[in-house]
Image (cartoon, rainbow, N blue to C red; front, side, top):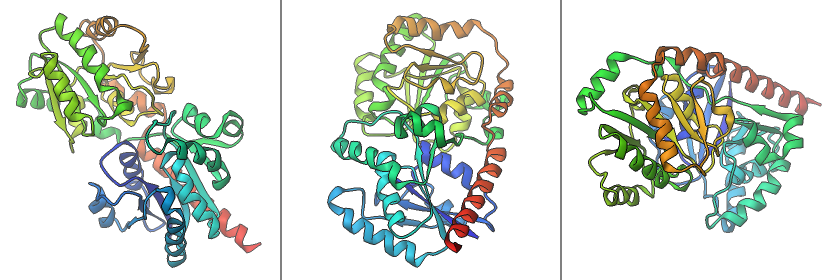
Length: 376
């Protein structure tokens, strides 16, 4: 058995972490085991499940430039004490350089950088992230991404075309396939039987652009009194968005649902899905929503690779709120076969059962490649 160490923020119930758990559950754990390097000292919702499956959660000293020597020592000890870790796979954006450089220094032969986004947020670590972006390719042996645009952003077009690999943000389609009985039960439970429910799943941060989403919904609400906005997620901007909803007079029409374990059921209750993000790689939530057969509206800052269903579309962020509202409200007049969504998404390569088997073989071949390299 070989072990793959995934470097993450922490194993909270968020996009990258859910993506990893989807694949982890598909592994033959007599052959492949996942471990997780949490770079924030905060327990995650997935920690218990990871340990129940035989995985381990390690906590690093953190991605702080002042702690880099301490981080390297920590990684050296961790990898020396666990020689069954054959692969280090980073999901920390450009700061994945920390784990990959440390793994390179101790002789780990397979080091995967994984691009999940198409932009770097300007936060206090912005300059450090720009530096790490330049150094990242030299620390990795393999260049992966959730899609074309993310890979090109992180590694450059030349390197991506030469050696980039797309690992689809695959999901368990049976969980998201449209189920009318689930829809009816949830809408009745939340008194939404006669409502037009617009859905959104995402962390309350700058990237997801909730402030624009509320402005768009305000335009929808003027024309459709029955409209409701269901927001699933938590984050640092949640309180300010609740205040904005109140200022817009929408407090009774916007549902702040928090972190949900049954997000798959909420997709059934929705009538359409809106993601006006400022930037994205290839969002897992977009795949999930389309698997549920939902009409989807993405901003033009989301890669066109997300358009899986015929009626999924991208709308320019330069378009006015009224234009967004007009297009969203038009779906009330359209009839679509929501049950077909899961099959279309499967054909596009997002079935976790199929993609999980492929990933397992890739990891095994990589480990064999590393062993052969050491034997020379």
